[in-house]
Amino acid sequence: MHTRSTRPDGFVISTDPARLDLDAIERLLRSSYWASERSRASIELSISNSLCFGLYEVRSGRQIGLTRVVSDYATFAWLCDVIIEKEYRGRGLGTWMMAVVLGDPNVRHVGRWILATLDAHKLYERYGFTPMAHADRWMERIRSKTDCTQR
Image (cartoon, rainbow, N blue to C red; front, side):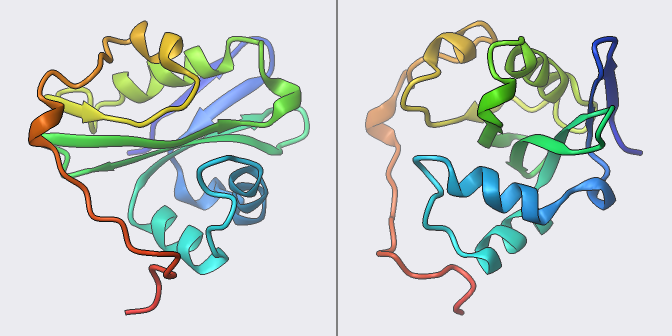
């Protein structure tokens, strides 16, 4: 079952993968500071292996936003690729999208969520996100500019 939430001002959020517009998603991510160099193949692979929330303008049917959740659906979720087209920002769509994502029946019971942000701390604090209590326990491995689709 797919999540669907509609606002009276003409926007809808859906988790239906058939609605996702990969061209729109690629344009959105290329405009971001974190995914501007991501290849189309990497974008497609990440979308197909994630729970994606597409944000659409009802009138035009255009996809204008995305939130991607990577999760085991039991204990852990990573909130990533949260983005809305610039012309639609400032309308409360990001706040609404966060409420829909965190209330989704597939992941609302997950105990540990993580995310990384450069400038949206205030938004995420409203939903209980805080700096990591034990950041010294976390480690990361970053591959150099290698396309993740090369195996």
